[in-house]
Image (cartoon, rainbow, N blue to C red; front, side):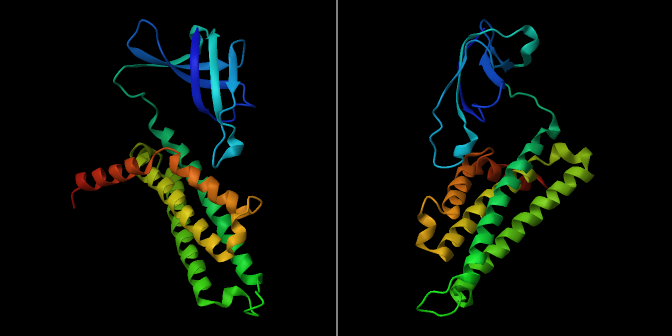
Length: 237
């Protein structure tokens, strides 16, 4: 029987199957369980966030939910990390891809705006102003860097399956670059567009909020940088 609460339960309003970690009574271990929506499974609508609102990541509530022995996926002794397949790090690529897409959307909006917006005081599109061109140019450079690294890692994943277990720091870097680069791109796009981008109905307002939430997607920045530093220190020239 399982009882407890799971936070950050993505798509909770619409999914019927869950992976839940819970302490095992009488054992110094944690179990990972496969749980189906059934009697005792509930939801508390807690997901009132700055960004990523559509993920519906509310709290999953479990109240004396029966799970059969076959629903036990794995047991991890206390003090140890859950062992997963080396190629399980592939999920980091889809996280990076999501934020790369948001960055591209912000870039596209700013470029289209700069081409078309003609303030009365100027008489020509703002895209002809050096300051605007600088912001757009920085976005082009940032997005190109993100995409190049992301596509490089995707190709390595496909072409070097035997190396997948060694690519975790590189995949984490792809996520780090995508999120932090996307934040810079969205910020510059909002500077180009101006105050109208602050309104809730504006596409850039939502894009910026959603990208900001990416900072809290795993792995966090500090761990990514630590892994990169350790890799550098342990690699001899």
